[in-house]
Image (cartoon, rainbow, N blue to C red; front, side, top):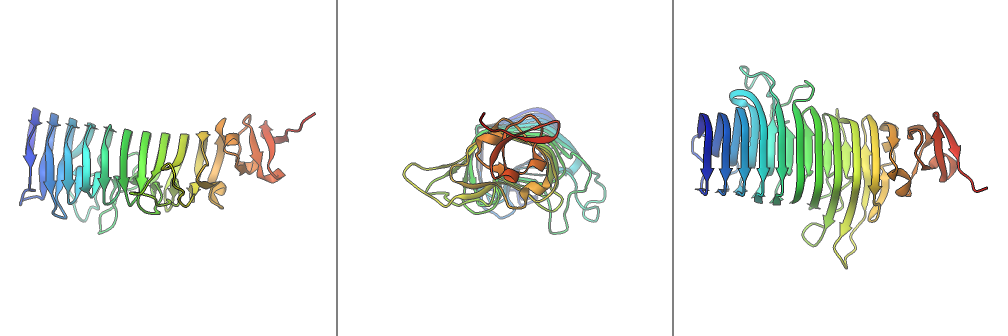
Length: 342
């Protein structure tokens, strides 16, 4: 355990078994300026985390590490330990081989279980250039079930991003179980091994951007996720932006089509689409999906070839109107206009 410390380097160490005291292989609590580099964490116990951060922690870097753990590879649990915010965590160039998650975090716990801890925040987390597979969610962003639950305070998770990663799991790539601010997934190759949604929100999310996001299917992961993005329960997006998102089947194969890109069962204020490829996708949105969208915009809407209702389109963007049998249309001042050849 690293506790009440700063300016620490943990380098080129093997952690072959979790501590009998707390089930965590390396616990970091009330610390700042810690670098964990070139280490391996291998322990198959069902409660064995690799690197476990308790609040308060700041400026933590985990790089070039290997994880094969029975529980979370990396856990950010702000209410535990001394309790406090966790800020500026960087994970890069790591390999995951059968842990439960790449990262699990939570910011609050039911008061009955931890009455001395209030709601805390996790801020500025970046995961980049990582590869591998896990047995649960890749990113479990919140906690629910078993009497533990996040509160409804807004934006407990702020500025979270995953960049240039190739990962596989049977559950969602990302599950939002805590109120969240800004999130970005860029340059992602996700290999699905079940029909679960790729991104699932059950709590409010301020802004989510998926850029250069590929559902990559091959012999190891050829499932058809129910949707790229899904909202249920109290999950909703204030702004959802999709740029260059697609489904890619391995050359020479033909798998079952993904049912839809969007399955938005709860209100979403703004959806922006740019360069969405519907090859290997049945529909842009689920049957009831457009009823939850306040405004749809982006030059990529018409490029999908999907028909959308006049009611959801923003002004000044071309689209194919489902109200007019797929006629090319544009809204001017909120009024739909059909485009015809002279």
